[in-house]
Length: 266
Image (cartoon, rainbow, N blue to C red; front, side, top):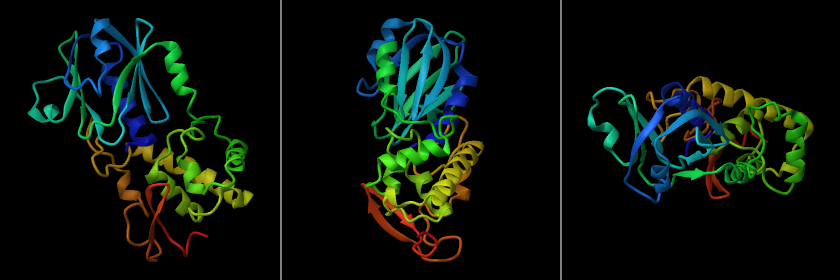
């Protein structure tokens, strides 16, 4: 599933390509993924595209919003010239702009969604999300408070809890825990303050670096302009050995596969 760096990359690309454009028509091929009510408001202009957690929000000039979740395999194609047929694969929606370009939403497993919402519904949905880990609100003290509230949960589960911290997923949680030297099975309440400081630093550092590299292309992820590059820097996710050549242990935590080094991570 695309995590914060991948979604932030896509949002930045969408902003440069479709911000200010007017959707004049739309084709919806799967109403379970793309809200058919979008067609009823056309034509409509896209004022901006922003991210909150793993969500993409299209701000429209009629006061409504298209709240988008990519989930496991969702992605976009932006087409401004006669293309090959790649954009047609797994297409669930197509949005035509007044200048002749168009945007498609594609989803292999169809777990994602594009929903038309008003301001109140958008606030209701976004209020469910926790602090942004690359935002000013993600201070060391705030992070420490979150761990205190979730003291009985294992630390990796806390990092993945979108109601506490919005945007971290399985890839970057494993990476941050490795560099912080923390075993993912440890209870959040057992993490000492010096360790909390290190983990806070690594979460911010790794997410920032991954955004600069346009995310990690693993499984089915691709951004609008192609592939991400941060997968080249991953050290434990989908690996057999850690950077120090210790064999990694692979377990299941909270329904998610988890790799860690029992030597480097205590």
